[in-house]
Image (cartoon, rainbow, N blue to C red; front, side, top):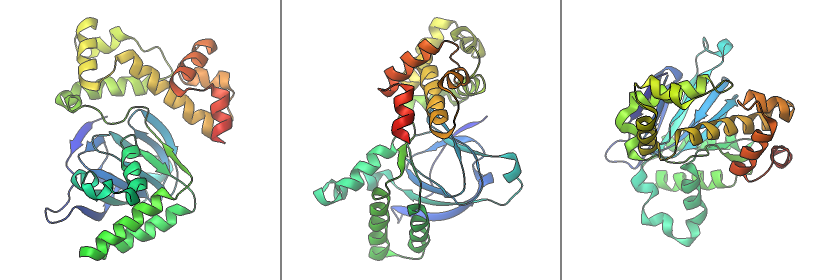
Amino acid sequence: MEFRFTKTDIPEEKSFSVRKQSFEEFPVIHAHNNYELNLLTSGSGKRIVGNNISPFENDDLILIGPNLPHYRELSEPDKNNPTEYLTLSISETLANSDIFQIKELESIRNLFSQALSGIVFKGDGVKLIEQQILQLAELKGCDSFIALIKLLKSLTEIEEQETLSLTSELPVSYYKDLDQIKTVYDYVLRNIQDTITLGTAAGLLNMAPGSFCRFFKKRTGQSFMQYVKDIRISTASRLLADTEMSIAQISIESGYNNLANFNFYFKRIMKMTPSEYRKNFR
């Protein structure tokens, strides 16, 4: 699976833009330099945001911050059907500008902060956002900026929303060796239920384990084995929320053959037990 850093296409004379794009335009794990509100109106499949792996269905609405890797893969029945995204791109310069520092816009400022880890929005509010994105595409000047503020306010008012990634913005050094990082990332995703070893990961890059550890930590900001734990707990969180699997089965599906170890690491990362997470989520 390819990994690509892209530059969001916002015209120089604008600080945000709206566009439609086909699913085929982004068939790879990618990240970009601005904020992106992305709505897939039809289709279902698997979504990756940072180290979160989750299923998605029609009207999948996510807000992604700068430098956060993400990817959607359609399920087999949907791959042959035309699928479009609605995308609102907001420049990082605008999101970080002084205008959002005023007290009255605190909720929007917090929204941008949360977007660094990715947010998924669900429920009836998604259809309203779709209408507002389409309306925004027809406006210019002050009217478009006022509409943008109203749209962002509507996002803050959607009650059914979830932060996606356990790891937010990655350091710039992450992108200096994209091919190597992609190889390791792909190895972890493909073997999440199996044994993942430091030696195997290091061997993929023709490195000694010690050199690989330093390489991975420098470019991702965390150790390789901590990254693997985060991915596994992210997988477990999704299964706890979206399935009726027993906790013991979820432990195995997430790569933990020892239930006690699974419970220990889940509570350590999520600050609650798997049972508490499932109960609170629902």
